[in-house]
Length: 80
Image (cartoon, rainbow, N blue to C red):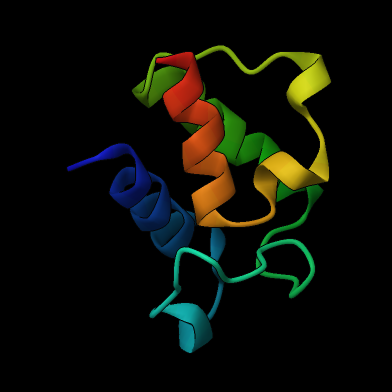
């Protein structure tokens, strides 16, 4: 499983409380559409750091880096 698939699976299984977004695309707006909130971002960061062995710096905690599955994967892949 690649980075993008890992992130998408985590978001769908752990951060989405309903089945409405079970077919989440890589470009769906996560924050704007309310799929994830600030608590969800913190949980996601914990997942990224623990499972993908990356360290997310404070300066990287900007909405643009967490806007879509694609943007999260791009940020993580740059750190690998």
